[in-house]
Image 1 (cartoon, rainbow, N blue to C red):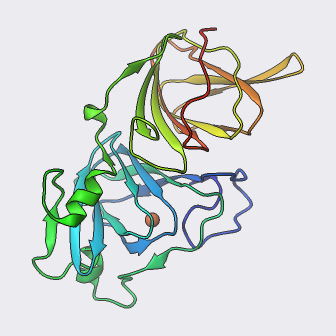
Image 2: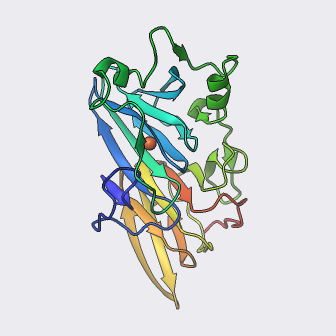
Length: 270
Ligand SMILES: [Fe+2]
């Protein structure tokens, strides 16, 4: 399902989605046993796992490093790196994919099953015996490269904002180094909200758990919408907006900002 833009797939020009500025957002569901063949993009692309376990492989010269990601883990696929994914676990995978440019070029396939044996496509192009496990302390150059781009939710520091909610920094200053977009996971307790703020780039809230009310403000008039799991609001650059959790349970929200510049907003409790 596409929320913002057409993503890094061949389906560019889809007009049924929100118009992208600096990033695209989509939701992907993959059944057990399915895979996506090794390909690359001119720009960075993140996979945020929502449910299930996903194997992501990075390939270079017939060698592959595979990492196993669980719920709320993320990988930012580096520019031009061959990457693919596979579901080997017993449950299907739900994940959110963002390409960090509004209108990405079509992906370049490296080991497409139409041109290569299925077994080679399933292993992302690894020659026999040339698949390595992800290891942040590993000596292989692909292991070392990948370790800069893998984020485990359980290992991330939790930052408490004075406004009363938490942030875990996935991409941007304090997280994976990037020059495109910031990506964070917000934890918003029941009844916590912030006063209106605006940015010089767009941002987007994708609710993972709980409920979040997002409001827009213009000339003293407001409009608001309550989001549930898998709902998204994109707010354009310059628009005053705010959020509040009106529910009883805490909300977990995937938050994308269309710039990698350090945070410019000081959140104030509403
Ligand atoms: Fe990709």
